[in-house]
Length: 610
Image 1 (cartoon, helix red, strand yellow):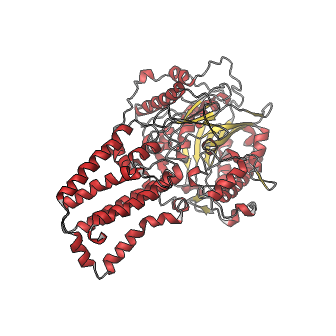
Image 2 (image 1 turned 120 degrees about the vertical axis):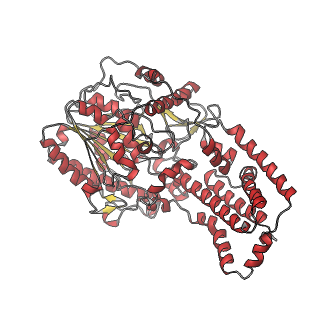
Image 3 (image 1 turned 180 degrees about the horizontal axis):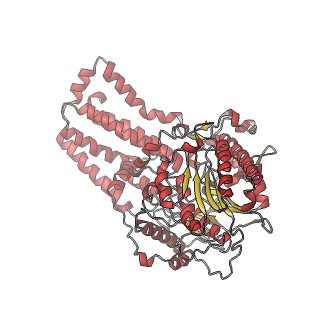
């Protein structure tokens, strides 16, 4: 019966696949809501097939089944890393998939492959089965047109009621759950960007400072403390703050970073602000003090713009500028991004070569050794330099070669995602220590301001299985939370620090440019920026995009995540737990959204670079 009724057969098949997608993304063990959200969309498509298809009806059903299956699979895989629902905007990332295939496969639980089981079985039956001609002839029969029309009208009405009332929902996960994944995908294709560009004359530093609640400081602390020194930024791949001072069975995981924290200026409450571009987004934010775009990677969306930037600011002070990354410069469109940022020179795979390759570039060992030699050459010119160094070996999925192991994991960590992450970061820390020693031996460290931070999270909550969650709970002494996930370290190191210190105020990657400018004694009066000098402001508000729902922000002691809007949002303390009320106000929520709109409007109206 089912084989003769493809409408019924494929409805059942796609209902099961909807359940799998909902189980992974929304965590619903059994939720009949998907019957009224996913199935009406599917029935609309099936009704159209029944109306217009004749001889090739079964083949069309199979293709539709394959396409919807691929969409569900893409949605659950994307959610496992980013924690958001994939949309057509992610097609810009397709050319990156091959390069990060190890990361993609590591996210896949074996049971995800069940979503393709029916395709394999039906394909086998069609190719080998003796009853194939009979099946085709039976399935080609026309269904009752009145019944199909009724199904079509019913499905259109239900889809409209799913989509229309939920259009204004801020949280993409909630919006997709209320609309249905398939309706949400369709909605994102046709929905217009409702945000209006703010006139350039209204985008002023004063307006930004007012929104951020910054105070005027006549004599800023640490101003010019590292004036005239080289500036070296070291961006550590996937390095989260919980690694600082972490010991496993009495063995320090990151002894080099631990010592840097003790001897220098450390910000433990520092947060990522990256999006779809991950590492390249961190490069963008740190070098511009602007927010990432609402969709896509900054290196793709903003690379044509004449961006105000740290390289340009330092060049005005007589600095040479360079950036170092062991991958090809085309990856994430970095070649164009570096032009927009105004770097004098970039060093990529063509400089570092294929020696000791890990994942898709030379190891941190090669990165640091060759970079140190080049920095020594730059210092010998007598001209101060600004260099941005991007480490990469501790990259997702963190399965580094055995010859890179520098620690033995406790047995309970072996073979786990968390264990692999910790071991890769232990290696990264070891190589960082060798690099620092090399810089000291070459006389570079003593004449430099060194800034070290993590580029983005390494352990998304959505990617952890039960064993990994238990290990993280062991590390934290409580459940691993959203605020923990986006918490990265920040360290400022230079010769002449009067007293090492820990600064408890919150900060984000957008704040690095003005803070570095303050330490370097460089005025920011004529450069628009959305960050603030971390040494001289006590209050901060940090809008988030992508890894958390739109409208999320960090403020003082709180991470706020909206629901449909502010009223049904959720507050998390920066210690990780969900709390009823930590004093977050709707005014802060509105200001965070306004800051993002100001940044988007500013960049979109910038002229293209030459």
